[in-house]
Amino acid sequence: MTATLPDFVSNLPFPVADNCMQVGGMPLTRLAQRVGRTPFYAYDRSLLTARVRQLRMAMPQQVRLHYSVKANPMPALVQHLAGLVDGCDVSSAGELKVVLDTPMAPEHVSFSGPGKGEGELSRAIAAGVLINIESEQELQRVAAIGDRLGMRPRVAVRVNPDFELKSAGMRMSGGPKQFGVDAEQAPQLLRHIGALNLDFHGLHIYSGSQCLRADAIIEAQRCTLELALRLAAHAPQAIRLLNLGGGFGIPYFPGDAALDIRPIGEQLAHLIARLAAHLPQARVALELGRFLVGEAGIYVTRVSDRKVSRGQTFLIADGGMHHHLAASGNLGQVIRKNYPVLIGNRIAGEQAETVSIVGPLCTPLDLMADKVVLPPAGPGDLIVVLQSGAYGLTASPTAFLGHPLPEEVLV
Ligand SMILES: *Cc1c(COP(=O)(O)O)cnc(C)c1O
Image 1 (cartoon, rainbow, N blue to C red):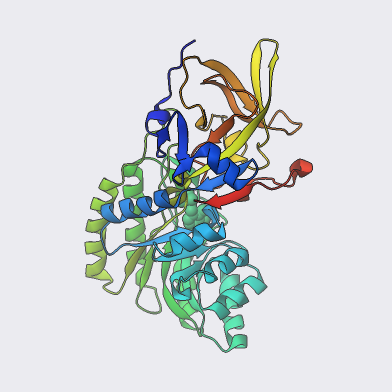
Image 2: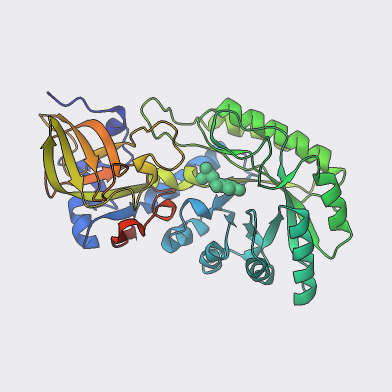
């Protein structure tokens, strides 16, 4: 069999020289030596910078770009992004600490998530970050903490909208949801805010994740704006911030086409004009995770063994689902599909073969690629899982089977 390279090889965001992928300005083989051991994650800062620049060019200049830290909370990466984006959204006190250690000013940080703990809230209020209120109970708790600390907490209301982001990989709105307060209950909550010693900033309306269709995102943003205009009538103060959520997806699987962000930017310009006419003080923010970081990251694992079982060839790698649950297909996928994988030190070959790549765990779930066509590889070769910059290490069951954690480098 001769190699027919999948599309993602010719569209690789990383340069190739001498048939070897270049990461952070050096061959992957040398980077592996620099890191000192496999497996590891590597994130490319020039790709992160380029992605933010690409977004800025496509979006109206008034749009504030926020980074959703849960996509990848590696401190060096957050530090790098903090210098590029206008705000960060965190979902725990742990993520809050990472952001507060960067030069990002606390007034540009917001805290979202159901069930924020009392201790987390009090730390976030003391830090001066914006709390996205997600229930009546939480509202009362935040006000009480503010009284205790002698501070006026900065708050916004996270609304569970009465619509959903169509064709999203993960729906986070529309029906009954644990996130935010239902749009129907929001007017009452907004009135309660007016009666408390709270500094009200605006609304946070997040409808979904991993969407690759511009028209669906445009439609959700349009509905979000209309909902915000309706709710503004109940707000205790002028709306200063309207967080429209995000949902921008990246292609993971064969047949996925990259999201075209240009039409989103064009439509957003119209929405912003409409918003300015009704709520002149409101600034618009987009909150993105994987779109900013997903394509800039790779997971690298070395082949440690190769075996043929009843006619099927397996490459056994030193890393697997315990470091990268999503690539194994066990993080929310209904039908298992292969992440894009390649042999980083042997991008193309005269020959090709069909192999399955598995990790070292004693479970058939530890499958990193099922029957993929690759140049022949064996012990010592470096397997690269692309699109691994978001929801990789921190979304994985690292304690399962007790292997060491992988390294993470920003290059
Ligand atoms: C997870 C999450 C995000 C980021 O989602 P991506 O798909 O990574 O862009 C943004 N906002 C909120 C509220 C989230 O929960």
